[in-house]
Length: 255
Image 1 (cartoon, one colour):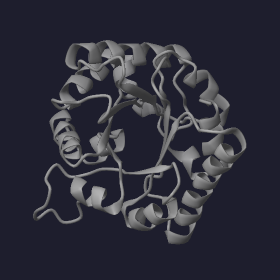
Image 2 (image 1 turned 60 degrees about the horizontal axis):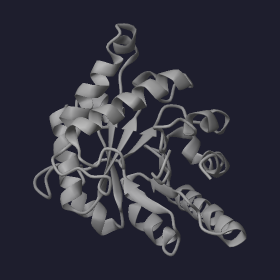
Image 3 (image 1 turned 45 degrees about the vertical axis):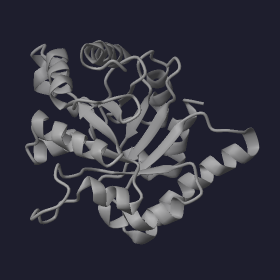
Image 4 (image 1 turned 135 degrees about the horizontal axis):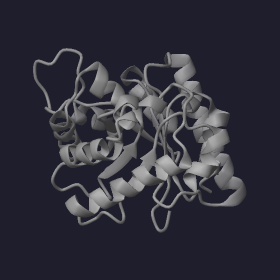
């Protein structure tokens, strides 16, 4: 992992009513605070990304904690007639420091293209948010031997001008391993992350410092093997982020 500070980000997706969401946020903050009280500074970044309905109250719950908060998506425009959408400036106003863009569920369910993801990431940057830009192949693309070409193409197409290690994180998430219980082998992950790192050298002067997360059924049982890989700088955690003990166990593999 070198000098890059690990990031463990929890994507709650469409889960969490008020009571359970606030309890989860408080529990994550409590784990981090307890660690620091007992053992000193926590040498990693922790992030939770609740559904939009919980952002303001989760922000209050996390106040004073080292745990940051992010949105799960944003619109490319600052405002306008876009019913149901949330802008980057609204996320910033609600207390977010990050936003996920280009998640495979958005690319699939909402037919988001690389150009749209790029515009969303640029909007995030304009509002001083860190964009977590997701890339990854489907099972069919992998079976055809196209996985690395797809990842490289998405990276080039989705990264806006001016992306740096300060305002951008890349998340590699093989689509076939998200919410399926399937996990890419460490060899698969190492190859993909190395491909992303090489791709970054071609489009960003900050490539060595930019963090690359792995996402795709990350669990306490497989996290250690994934996090020790050279170009894996943390995880974008889905289902396991809804259980505080599982989320914390994953974070501990980076300590």
